[in-house]
Image 1: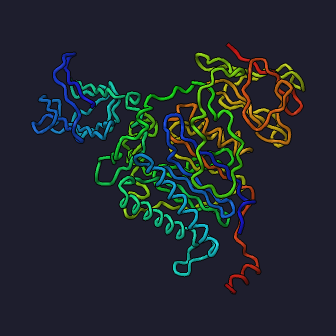
Image 2 (image 1 turned 180 degrees about the horizontal axis):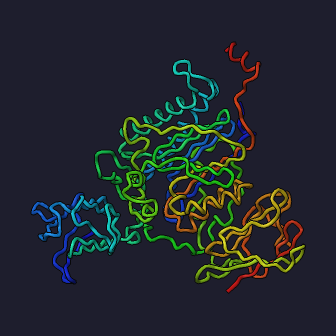
Image 3 (image 1 turned 90 degrees about the horizontal axis):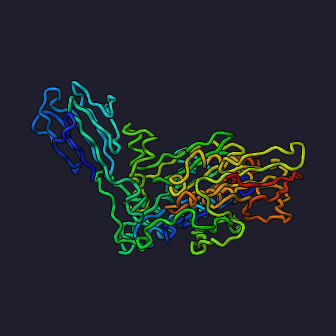
Length: 270
Length: 274
């Protein structure tokens, strides 16, 4: 639960936890957080807490409310924000960053009914809870790297999911470059055609090559490495003399790509 | 009227990297110009049941209705085209089915689903949505969100409590304020828009837009728009590469030709003899 630490001149005076939906701050005694100082208005400010988020609102106080040195009317409080009322400081501490929330609860869509600020609890913990730790993104080649060439057309109701079981890590994949630390860098150098010798850095997640309407391929940058996929045109790209099918093909250092009559070399940059 | 020449449709759905179940459900019928996407919620497999019921009820019912009554035909009582009314009616029917199943069977208690339905007719499209599943549009260079979520976060943004930038850091991303099948009645938000040649529409569950930024989604559709199937898989793959914490579903629809309602003399004659 989030809390506020009240201090003055660097001396900690008291701690308040934000357990209520509305926590009022002011000089008068009926406030949840009473600060008996003439620089503080009778009803100075309020903090509205909705689940893990807290919002500070100034209630038209005489001397105003500062957050991190800035005067605010309304403010969405972030961890370690410092709220200032006159000489008093309130530090907002919310020790539950998104990463610490249990993965099973995380982003499970829930309905919020009007009139009740209480989300619908799922009837029972789902079996997903057992797999709580998130699968590291770079654990190997997922089956999505080579999507099955499915034809999508007429009515599909409750289409079968692409089997998650096949996403088993495959570290032995010969062509996938070893998991690099930091973002991978790659580039393409043209070997033939009018622009021979030119280099093209693959800085974007997607880079398209070729001529629209004739032949286009795309190189995608993923945590596991670079992949080339055919996009449009009657001819498919050729990598190291082999014509690609519809599936994504992992690119290795110094692979030779032929596309729309132009030869080019892919290489990794360190 | 057959829309399969005018519309190209591709879809993909995936459980993501963390969840064992896929609670999303997608359906499309190119001949009727209809696409439906639902993201279910509820314990055990109830989420799948709710989203599956929503897509099945809405597609089959609308398919049958559209056979008899084209979406562009005019309702004699209101003088408006039928599209909005038939969508509203079928969504209400799906809501009742899910609600009753949830009430009568304890294992389905509390299940519900978000929904986005698009019906194409007469160079236009009618869009219905409930919850936080979204419709986006790429028109020319412009990529924009068409639907506005029914979520706590969106309400906070609308009331000026937080900015869209702060919303990205909020922990309350997952709270929807409206869902299908939770209450005895639900109001779907329905709007109509003009379609234009070359438009690409994206229907997606929150598993995509929470994991991949709008800019990246727009870039993928712009660069891979020539190959919708590949584009759909690329979007799912990007969500999974970014962590894939939720089920991911996408449906892409491209307008290849204009699809005006038949207005010739033959159509008029047919109308008289109905």
